[in-house]
Amino acid sequence: MAAAVKITVIGSRLAKPGGEFFFMQETEECKKCQVRGTCLNLESGRKYKITSIRNTNHLTCALHDDGVIAVAVENAPVEAYVDSKKAVLGSKVVYEPIFVRKEEDDGLNYALFAPKGLLKGDKCIVVDAFEGFEKDGKTYKRVNLVLE
Image (cartoon, rainbow, N blue to C red):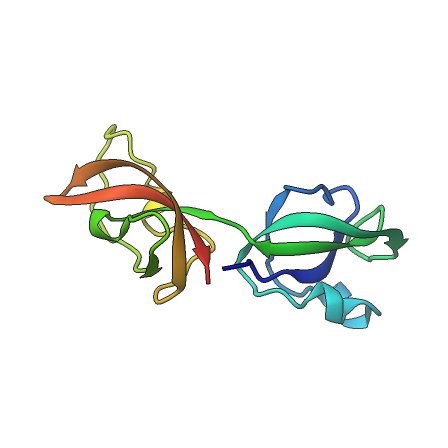
């Protein structure tokens, strides 16, 4: 399945193929901008990866000191912990955040139990699967998920 590519604009200093970013939300300065429709066509809170530079013409932006340029982006992989039964490379899964009790010095990255960029019920594809571990009597794996 080919990734859905979107065209948007990003600060010219940040516009590098392979670069990843979280799109946050519109600011007050955006309301008067002539390119706001192109800039704001991404989903708030989601992670994106720049696949190519579309145009090197700098457009004026109230937020970016060196202006913005057009780029192509796609959904970027988000690292997360999932139930090990769902961690099958290439499989389609419905994301569910995991709620666990935090313990000191267990070596786990607790942000990956409910990572930024994923919401409960998101339909995703497992694009990488890594090591597994046990926590509270259950087995989990670290994976990279991409929104469908």
